[in-house]
Structure formats: C-alpha cells, structure tokens
Amino acid sequence: MKTFCILSAFALVGTCATTKYTTKIQNLKDSITIVDSTLVVKYSNTITAKELSKALYIISSDTFEGRKTGEKGQKLATQFLKDYYIKEEIASPFGDSIYYQTIPESFFSNNIKASENVLAYIEGSEKPNELIIISAHLDHLGIENTGEIFNGADDNGSGTTAIMEIAQAFQQAKKDGHGPKRSILFLHLTAEEIGTQGSLYYTQNPIFPLENTIANLNIDMIGRVDNIHKEDKNYIYLIGSDRLSKELHYLSEKVNNTYFNIDLDYRFNAENDENHYYSRSDHYNFALHGIPVIFYFNGEHADYHKTTDTPEKIDYLLLQNRTRLIFATAWQLANQPNRLVVDTKNQLLLN
Ligand SMILES: [Zn+2]
Image (cartoon, rainbow, N blue to C red; front, side):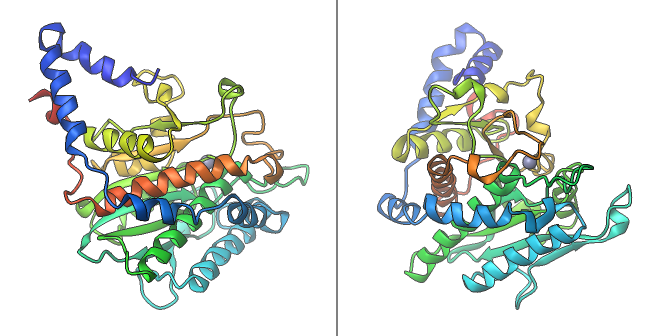
C-alpha cells in the first residue's frame, strides 16, 4: 500500500515514459540532503513518553469537561496551553502574553460561543518570512447527555501534547544557539469537531501571509493503534504528503528512513478512499490555499468519538516516536537550504 500514489502516477504517464519518470523520482530523492542529523537526534530525544504522558493526563482529565468549543472546559484548555508557553518562554506571534486568536460568536452557527485558537511562535534566524505551521485541534466533544465526559485523549490530546513537546524541543535548540532558520508557528486550533472552523478562521484571517507558509504538518490522533496494525504497531498513516509537493513526500520519507523507520502507511491517501480523511481535518483548509500538508493519523479505533477515549489507553512510547518523526520532519523543512517546492500539477516529475 505504501507505493499507491507512485503507482497511480505511473499510470498517468504510461509505460513508455516509465524509465524517465523513475529517473526523475530518483533525482528528486537524491536532491534532498538531510541537514543537522546530530542536532536532530539530540533534540528529538528531548521528546519523551514521560513528558507526553504527564501533559496528556492533564489535558484529557475531567477538569477540562471534554473541551467543547466555546465552553468552560475549552477555555481551561486554552489557558493551560497559554500558561505552558509562558513557562517555556516561547513567545506568541502577537507579542507580550497574548496567545489567543479569538474567533467571534458571529463566525459560528448553532449557538456556539466565541472561542480561541492558541498560537506560539519561534522566529527563524535566517529566513523569518518563511513559515512552517505545526497544527493540532485542541477542542473535543464536551459532555455526553448521560453526564459522561468525552475526555478525547487520543482525539486530540495526543496531537495537542505532541505540539507542546515539539515546541519545547525547538526552543531548547534555540537556547543552545540552534534555532530554526525558518519560522515555526505552533497552532492549537479550536472548533475542529464542529467542522474544522478554527483552521477555516485562521486561513481567512492568517497572522502570517499564506503565500509564505511553506508547509502545514497537522496532527490529529497519534497515540493509539487501529485494528489493521494490531500485530505491528510501529506505523502511522500519512495523508496528503504527495498531493501538492512531491518534494515534501520524499523529504518526509527520507527523514523517516534516516532516523526512525516507522511504517508510513499511505492507504488512506488514495484519491478514491471512501473515508475522505484528506478533507476531514484542519490541514485541508491549508491545502485549499495551495499549501503542502501532511496529516498524521493513527486511524479509527473502538473508542473513537466515545467517552472511553481515555489517557490510560494511549501507547506513550508510540506517541513519543511519532512525535519525534514530526519534529524531525519540521526541522528539515525549517533548516534545509531550499524552500520546499510546490508542484501542484506534479510538474517536478512530469515536465
Ligand atoms: Zn480529531
């Protein structure tokens, strides 16, 4: 399943062009040079199961009442994130201690109250105008009619804590004199569960120009194992990586092959996939603006969107390794010499 997209691209060009096409793929792969490998290993090792677990037990605790958009629990969650970034001395792009992008009630329907995206930011040292966005939604489903709380540990406490740890690793590197060359925005989105409204609002009201946003790595559920992978859990689904930039796809693979060897499963990236995951989480609003995206996802499981999605069911070592992969991919995007090439129409390989 791993080669699905490459195979479908082969089908497009026909057999006579196959050699040329494979040469182009090889040339593209060869053109990607892994940067700063010693530093990447050093700082990815600061991302640990223990710290992820500590934060995830908090964010998915009953105190946060299922983090329903606009409600008290969601506000507590955004406050928790803001306090974290202040403590970690990671700035907000707004300056001072304003970490919120407030979305007014008028933006929503169905009596949803005003809500907030949370933004933290590390400015690039050499190309500050070029931006990588690492995103995950912070909201969830609130409280069940029975009074039971939707803790949303995997959905999406896992992505939320992954960003916290990735931000901390980049900040530690910066303190040591190894800050990213391009800027990085850590974007905790609200209102995903009611139709990716937080990312829609951000892309309609971007804090940094979308034309300078070179990639979006979006994380939504990376702490569990689905039925397909019960026997070998060292996997993650990647969706979207080759749609708008072939370079992103091969860069992501090269980073993984260099450091982690996680099974990158592309089955849900198939254009005709009936689940339509490509359009179902926040990255899609960035893709609609031509920004290359990767969506990281563990697939659905028995506790998906149930009150039983609780923190003791998370595999923290797995969460750690997947988070490290995303960190290392972001590091490569932020620090490699060239800006990621967008080839929406597959120009890199077909011309
Ligand atoms: Zn989700």
